[in-house]
Image (cartoon, rainbow, N blue to C red; front, side):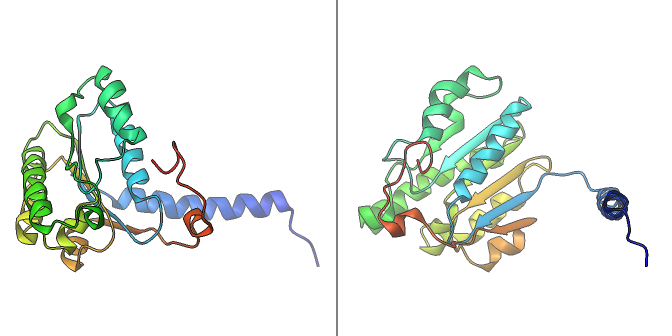
Length: 208
């Protein structure tokens, strides 16, 4: 019995893989913006969202960032976008907005959080209706839906009726089935283990 050459075996396998990839690329013939939902209990949802922000900025695209919940503790992405990214084309200080109340479990003020969420959503709505924005990141928006701080239908309509070329990234745990159904891509980040569970402090440049 002859033994197939490893190099030939690998080449044959890669040829089949290339055929599958090429077929998927050829089948994708719709050109429009997409809605991406990054959810799940694991670490990395916002990090992934900001990775796409950096990618879009690399192409000189106009990006808008709205952060719900976060905003009390300074983060590396806030420092970059407020102080450094403003030197890039198509990015201004007004393109980055934070609700600024911090985590809802810290504030413990439902009425205050709802008011702040509505004010923040008004900023997001303006971005979602502005065709100049190629990409809008709505970081931690799902919590606002889960806690019923925002009207779900109002949120869904704004995302659905955005300019056709605009893409939207939504991050956060939960948020209900409606936002998942509206999204073109849904990725769930699974928590396998976390340094926090082993009493390791959050690290600057990694966790914030």
